[in-house]
Length: 235
Image (cartoon, rainbow, N blue to C red; front, side, top):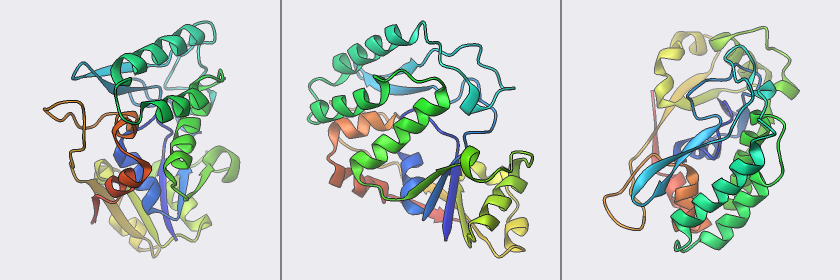
């Protein structure tokens, strides 16, 4: 059993879905603190050749509130949704996959969410279904009941409950985990390092690190699967 755990991000970058696709079970960490200025409620698309930030309006967002309880601003959301669709059309209406991806985005954002955890999680699940990622996905808030634990100890507890013998984390998490702590429990700790593989955009230079939306606009699901495999697992 190979396990991965991450907070829900809004239409996250390719590396997020590489992690989802490489594990047997993926856990959405929705009952941990909301991170301000992170990628939970915002991301970037390519507009006129430059990264353009979109951000879902929240109501009194705080790092003292869990992601699953961080409310979307209901009074501003409809206006944001309309602006989001217009931005996507302006940025990508000439892209080869625009019509299909436009419908995907609408399926996620058109229903007004209560919380950002709901919306971000919905975006992850919708993209997985769209490109054919079959990994089993759970929410920490509905399965494990271990929110009293923190950081590494909580991850180890989830690994134990799932009988995981491998845990994979994005490469940026090297400082968060002790290889010895995992090793003494019989768990192989690996880190996923994405390869910076260019794909088609409208014109050079290539802009990496954007939302998965950008990739979907230019690549079929089969082509996306090729990009999903373009990573290394390192110690």
